[in-house]
Length: 414
Image 1 (cartoon, rainbow, N blue to C red):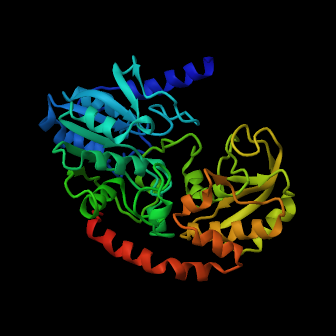
Image 2 (image 1 turned 45 degrees about the horizontal axis):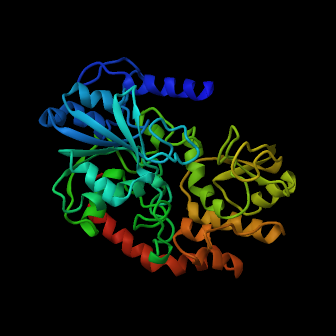
């Protein structure tokens, strides 16, 4: 209880800090200031005054801060916008929750606002609540991957607002994985789920959240009244570190930018019965299981020839998730830089594990294989089972991926 209160108190410091409509506190990552200005910063400086007195539903979490780590809640209010309610995604408003919050809403006294849990709201709930608003503002740091639930939240909000006439303002932020490009299979309808696989795209879609909104409006939710506030100074090929923006962990298990890069390749392994280091100091940098011997495991991984990565033998003890409280042998994965295909890395490591270790198995949930929902297709799993090379799998998904890539280009801003 005490630790939760401490976390909440610290998060509140980040959320509550305000100074003026444009922000002026002197936090700097370098003497020259940020190279990229987020949509939040552009909106506060240039457009917020146009919405003074408007009643807003704010879809956000702890990642909705400016360069000086000031919360969007305070900044919007300082500009005269009435933040009447907040809708928070997975991990909650403060970003520390590893389990889904069972409550539908609560009153957060620190920001004097009711906070609704998006994962507990139906489409009817959202339509009813947003009818009370003049505008809906979406400001969350996305990860650029279909299985990352924040992009699903954007789709959900857009579906609910479609045809309502209520303006949706998306405050754009960098895509930390954009430098990897478009990758993986396009989502097949039969593998659509409410949270993990809903956004109609390839596994990595190489769009910012603003571009994603433009794409989804243009192709699917054509009657959304959408306004995207563009960033300044952003280049889609830059790595997040080149933006000079502070890395605010978008979720509890992505503490560093390096962990988020590794996440792109490791998350598909949630579909097999190994630990990905959740509940350790190195989530998504550690992978393993109780039945893996680290030295031989890493030797096998090195023999895969994944030139962007190196592997160190380790033992680790997950405190939650798979193999919780059980010592696991495995590897610490080091990213060496450069561009790679996350789907290819996942495919080759999964194939090696499934072939080498008899206890390895495909995890299922609700009668379906988890890997199929994550990948958006069952062709990856079937290709591994049949012993196919990655090149063969890539040919199977190429047509749909190419079609998506052609469509998305119409909506690129940067």
